[in-house]
Length: 447
Image (cartoon, rainbow, N blue to C red; front, side, top):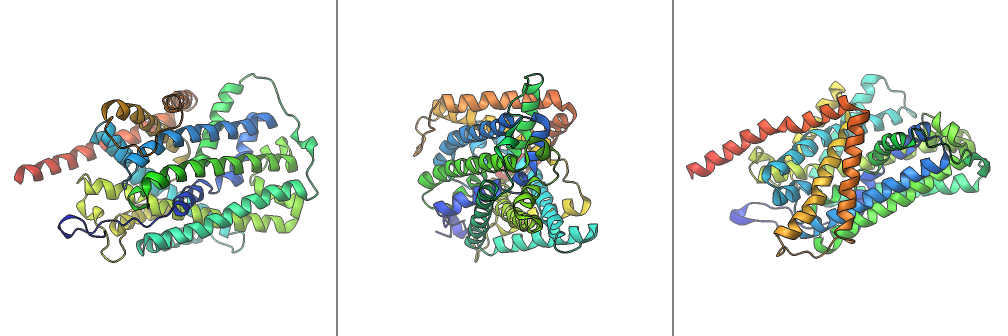
């Protein structure tokens, strides 16, 4: 039903399994896979390690997906992690997740991807720095308006863009192996000494997990997925498997064409690999592919991320107007507008370049807490309906938690300043939470 208690308009379940899966895949595959392999090759040097880090990153993401899928099926509500942490621990943990992701990091991600989109548009149309910002802002506003007009409009756009980008990545893989230019000799060096490898592997893992990040996006629209107890777990797991296969194969393809040394020295590895096999036309094709890829990724974030502040507002932990659903289009229009305003402001000021370490650090703190929530709720809420139970429980969530602890510790060791800022970014939400909590208490006292 579109109407809730006392005539309040509610979100409607309209998203299918395909929609939910394409939201995740389309958000995961942005521009990182076209660029990140160069940084990984620079740090790890050997082919075996550059491929292994993508496999390990994919397995880690899959462990998280298998675990958190249980929460998604049991609590298919808008807001995803905000709801899971609220129910498993306390409202403050849900708030801190919502603050870090829905109000700060996701709008910054939207700004960063929009600027990246505009930058690649410069391959076809000459743009000044100001022109890049204008194009980025227009893209943010256009995607926001599209998703205000209806969740199906946003989902259909996401499906089309994601299927195009999957076809593009598959094409890059096939072209790399089939057309002249590549050689198995380019896989050398295949291995090198272990000195400093563990630390370098951990740093490279940050870049890989940045590229994989997004497998949780569809949980934010849990309140709009049809048969969520069945479709949410499948969408989360399918998307993790699809992206793992694509990332590993395209990395092998790039290396087959260029070799580890050239991959490490490339600023746009996908373009350089395409230039070897397709000539000058290859760079243009890759630029076009990145345009589609970044646009699709941003559409996915715009669509899903606005549901976090929406859910917080429904709990009266943000301004209640943000929690309103548009009576005609059945979307959290006000939350989408606020998200756009923050994203545009960050685009104008350029304050989004801090994302890299901050996102992964904070995300894996909360991902670990969510996997802990699977265990905690199994013990405390045995009565909670669980249409899907995490495969491999309790080993699966425990392994993910252990990896998350290692990753966070390694990040603190390797990059203490950015790690401290990331922690501060999370904690600065506490006084804001206390303000809204006090306002809610006052309202209840008055009643």
